[in-house]
Length: 259
Image (cartoon, rainbow, N blue to C red; front, side, top):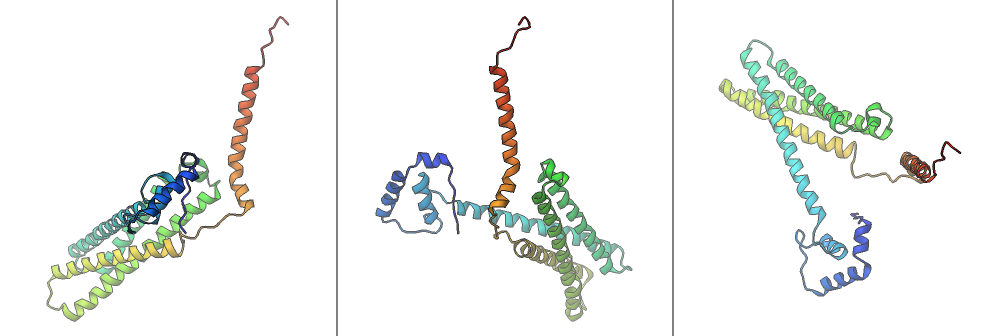
């Protein structure tokens, strides 16, 4: 269910009579339904606020941009890792190239994991309660980010190794007897990048929507609501007490030393 909460200003500026008048005006017109230009949210938003817009379409555009950026980042960082591993294997032909590629890839994924943890801690933990671990909700969210990033990196490594090493070796044994070294390297790089992208997407879907589902929202009980609102109420109460003390102090006339 999709529900929109409007602020009190919108409620005051658009009374029920005005909302019903707009609704009747739109229903009397013979306008056809359009999924992107004139859908149910367009109708409801116009009746409620007077603006003909749809927030779901805007959020969909933002989500598509985010997915494209995530795909691009996955492609670039896997391409760089596989390129470095293949370059080292070419420069050192007498060594075990599978171990070199796995070592470079795991090291690169560990670096990306540490970078993710640092960015999360640096920019998403502004409050001192989060940093000191006093807030159980924030600490739990931070632990989830760490666990999710670690599991996603593991899936990426497994997919890259499976496609680049095992599948690449199988293809080379079947049809690559007469292939040049450059052709083998390019195929391994392509399979490694494909495996990295596949692992990134599988890890993102599995550990964001299955392990930690974002659409399941727990409705807190009355006791949990009181526990959540207690610190804010105490802070507001302390501020109001300080304000009253200050007002009483200002309103009380100062006694002179002569009396």
